[in-house]
Amino acid sequence: MKLFDVYPIYDISVVKGKGSYVWDEKGTQYLDLYGGHAVISIGHSHPKYVQMLTEQLNKIGFYSNFVRLPLQEQLAEKLGKVSGLIDYQLFLSNSGAEANENALKLASFATNRKKIISFTKSFHGRTSLAVACTDNPSIIAPVNENENVIFLPFNDINSLQETFAKIGNEVAAVIIEGIQGVGGIQIATNEFLNEIRNQCNQFGSVFIADSVQCGYGRSGKFFAHDFANIRADIYTTAKGMGNGFPIGGTLIAPHLKPKIGMLGTTFGGNHLACTAALAVLEVIETENLIENAKKMGDYAMSEIRKFERVKEVRGSGLMIGIELFEPCDSVRKSLIFDYKIFTGSSSNKNTLRLLPSLAVSKLEIDIFLDSFQKSLK
Ligand SMILES: Cc1ncc(COP(=O)(O)O)c(C=O)c1O
Image 1: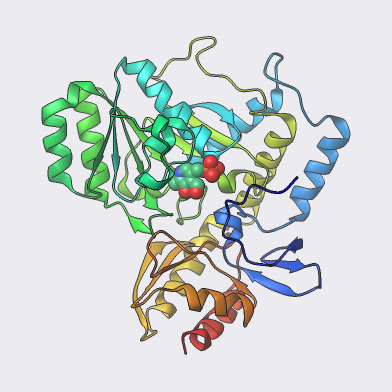
Image 2: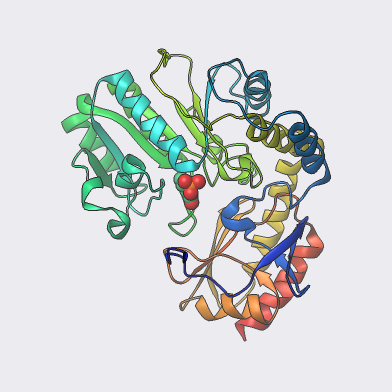
């Protein structure tokens, strides 16, 4: 059997990781400033993470949601404390797309409405409704086209108000990333997020804060949406939540009530996934990684802004977009093959994405700055 060839891959096989570094099978070391699509939050193979997962695997790795899983309760309590959403409820799944799919479904159940507002350049995943809310027609199959999803221009308060004025009573949910990731690191303004909150309050619609990429401390706050001082009705998380172990979370405000059978999953919230997520939260807390993300992000961005060949630097914390005056393909390739540094691309061809572990050090950022300067030449 062959692999289904859907990924534009580089010819490198990663066989080992430690902290901010990975190694290929020949022993070549790479500085990982991409974290496998923003997934590595506490660093590769963190000792606490390895220890907790190993101990758990020696006890039991999996059981499904027809018995009590106390690890889920522990995770819900800890996540409530670290995120500040103490009174929210947690539904666990396995990926960002699922976290969003469940959030959207729940919003529709709760409001008994169908319309969803999403925004230009957004990315919410590849399952049926999540992909319908994603602004990329090339990944929406005909069967996933959904006339209930309305795309509005990102950060455009007028069009938001006009749309709510016309059909506000039909809107089940508004879904928005605090910082768009795949879209090229575009930040939602505080005013825009506040206006979404206002309109949702006025019309009884559900505000979904997609925090799959920008959440979990990456922005320098637990949720990027926190910069606007608002509370969304639902937050969705994945990526950094398990530091590589598949897990997705839908964090639900207390006014949205559960009903037995309303949502469900076989694998979601299993013993290993919860243990991975508990280890991540423990390390985030004990090593002050949210503070580190802010400090290292501020430092990296202020240095990159000094580069003449950089048009714009956008981001917050360790979610950084570097826009060049031309497509960034060749610079990204040079960083990988000449300087052994992983970075990410985005749907905006000129924008390079940096999404390192939240534990990245100043020394590692300096290595990048030096190599980046050389690769630009
Ligand atoms: C903002 C956002 N939402 C949702 C997803 C989908 O997550 P997953 O690939 O885990 O399904 C992604 C993935 O890149 C994302 O960036």
